[in-house]
Length: 217
Image (cartoon, rainbow, N blue to C red; front, side, top):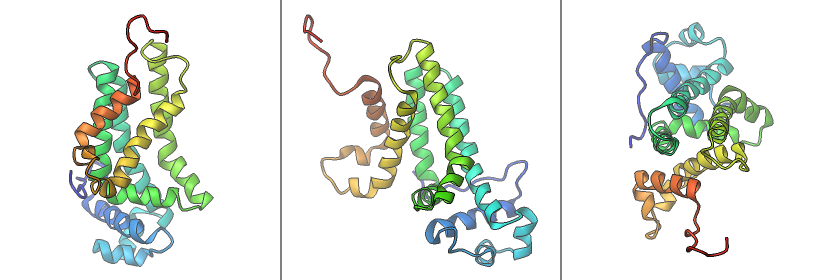
């Protein structure tokens, strides 16, 4: 896994615009939204302050652009889960692994989102939900609901709980990774692929051993 993946320009984003976004992510993730000025972002990106305003109307617009950029990448992973090849379990496994890779490959952006989401500032938390998290979670919930309608998942489960368990497990692994690596018994901390595979297995099949034949359930 890389420390921070560089994002190539898309058809609607210039290299300069992406440089501004990347600089803002680095600074916001360390100092927070309120602790960074547009002038400091311009210096970090190697552009003029006027150049930032050419692309983004305000600091808030720049902040929301960062959120949307992450949301677009995760949306692609969710669509593959919904419409990709293989069984639902196989697609869920692919999603969990890809989601974990995304977290580690975009550490600065992820830490920015987590910093703002858990800042205790209701307005900032609401912005994170509206600009990024809300739509992604709702899409994942819809995928679990579709699995229930298809008879692939128990119909007594709360799809929202399923979605939060899946994403929460990956987020915990990401946040606690450094600590987990210090625990000799936590071998999965050094094997993210193994972690994803076993996490999905536990999520779908539970921890209890299968009851012996004839045993009262």
